[in-house]
Amino acid sequence: MTQRTALVTGGTGGIGSAIVRYLARQGHRVATNYRNPDKAEAWRKDMEAEGIEVCMVAGDVSDPASCAAMVREVEAGCGPVDILVNNAGITRDTTFHKMSYQQWTEVVNTNLNACFNVTRPVIEGMRQRKWGRIVQISSINGQKGQYGQANYAAAKAGMHGFTISLAQENARFGITVNTVSPGYVGTDMVMAVPEEVREKIVAQIPIGRLGKPEEIAHAVAFFTGDEAAWITGANLAINGGHYMGW
Ligand code: CAA
Image 1 (spheres, rainbow, N blue to C red):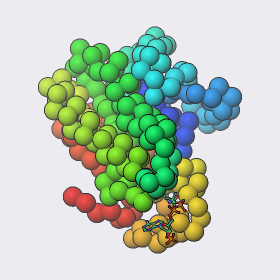
Image 2: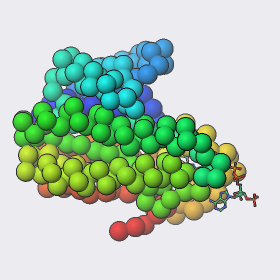
Image 3: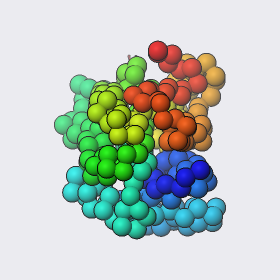
Image 4: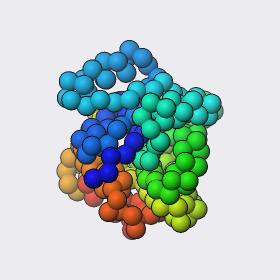
């Protein structure tokens, strides 16, 4: 397998860590951004203990200038980015009639505008080199909507609109662009949902349990491989059967 440089945004989070681990174990050089240096250093040490070296760069995905600097630093330290996983994401759940403008914009900036901020400095190099893999980590809730998540569902649905446009524009340049839409995975983000609400959600999942981060990482690795060269503009739902769109 060809060794490549992969940038995974939000790599220190639940699903992000699993993606970093999976791509690193496949032999890629993996980079991620962080916002909290103390948390990042503890995470880096945990990874190192597992034998995984990660190129860590400070960067706020909601800020275009910070992302441009972050990509420059990753490329200087680890080489041109051939694989980009737009994974960083946050929630600010509340019903829309109570939602503040800040709760709306924080989620849209971090989950959707980040796709512009991080992909824009990476795309020209991929086009020049005629190879690239871009994966958006969207959500089941971008597909089906979710009570209390008008901001998050709008941003996550927008990510797939981004995928299918970018896929068309870049297909001739050896670049594939796809979306993975996880359902409820057992990460801190999902465990923050009140227990009684979460139990009702799990009861709606035919497979009968939350997902595991590795189950999402496996799909990301699938899309980023050389063998997936003819798959572009796809959305792969991984949700235990919770939402079966087609
Ligand atoms: N459908 C219909 N009614 C619902 C509902 C639903 N899905 N969820 C809650 N309600 C109802 C309640 O039964 C309650 O009704 P009563 O007042 O008649 O008892 C009412 O809504 C509560 O409404 P409030 O406006 O008072 O809401 P709240 O302030 O108590 O909290 C909430 C609402 C923040 C949305 C809370 O229910 C919640 O956290 N829900 C979970 C949201 C969720 O799934 N987030 C996903 C986070 S993980 C993630 O995002 C990762 C991923 O990609 C999957």
